[in-house]
Image (cartoon, rainbow, N blue to C red):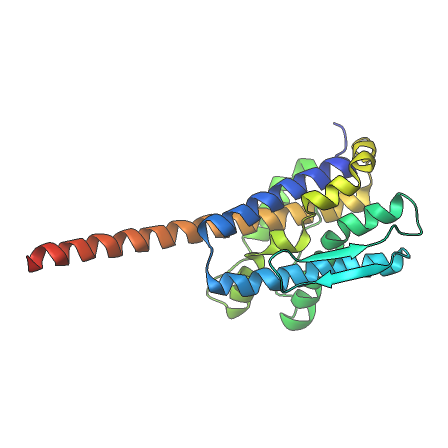
Length: 222
């Protein structure tokens, strides 16, 4: 069976990130989520900025706490590859951030599966998912961080537009190291989406129950 390619991974990660962010803004648009969103955005945009510095690009704007966070930069000194590295930098930065949190703050609470073969993805995904234990406080930190993982590690549509022609070329190029990182990123975003859906259902049930209870009290008082 053919190997999964760099371009396919970038596209899938971006689509899942977009879907995750849409769930947040459509169903989980609460103030506490704004804080988590800006944390994810800080990591996202800072990853872009670091990649700019590493590829010789000049940064003219670096804005986080605004309605549309962004990094505005000039063309990097590295042609083509520089733009690609800047566009996908949030994936590397986001995964590095989660690695550091898990290793130094949570004392390796989670053991990451190998994610070296897309054909074994479901098995690796389950091995990661079943490590989550909501009775432990460390896991709640991870859950909160996951709620905006899509904003943290996914490339935006503008990022992809900047390098769409390179991504089309990369659709035919496999790379085992990127496969590992890409499948791990996909697994994290999928776990995030699961949490988002569960949280959305719980909030909807609570709202429905409160409304029904209020109606019964109102009728009883008539």
